[in-house]
Length: 201
Ligand SMILES: Nc1nc2c(c(=O)[nH]1)N[C@H]1C(S)=C(S)[C@@H](COP(=O)(O)O)O[C@H]1N2
Ligand SMILES: [Mo]
View (cartoon, rainbow, N blue to C red):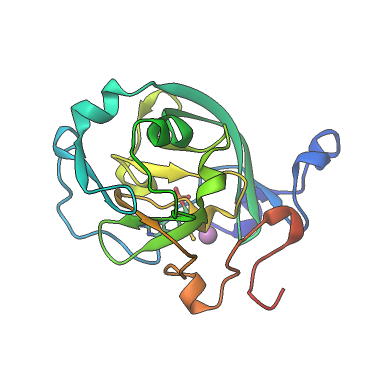
């Protein structure tokens, strides 16, 4: 089908919720540059590895579900010019996860690692915001594999490339480091409200 059918101009009454040069996605596009190895571990066998400046430990699925669970309604913005409003995610707020970890004073950034060759870093301070989560459920259903299930990061304040799908590891670091797209020229921060698409923007 043509792109035209899948994207619309921002409705005027909602225009303030669209960053510059974004259009409304009518469906939910899938964008995967780096797919995970198949087959994926089952949901209940999924684990999250914590390493770097927060000690080494591996959280089991049961341990993740035992953390406080939140449901957040968020607008998401992909660098390829589509936005989606009022997406509903359920999972563990990143700040609630931080509270459960023993983070060294020198930690400044968190690299989110996918199963497979994909990663993206954010400042640790961003992880203390209240609108980021590790999501396992989308619109009331277990998160579909193509959208990063069983577990993905959702960081709505940045272009969606920062929202790592098939999230399997969190590396606590004492500096920023380029992830998959940042190493290929994307902006190190990626604020959609500033149109930070390329590092040269
Ligand atoms: N592991 C992994 N995570 C990823 C990607 C990827 O290729 N691999 N693509 C990113 C990009 S560029 C976008 S726009 C979103 C797309 O998420 P979606 O497929 O659920 O729309 O996932 C991000 N997370
Ligand atoms: Mo993207």
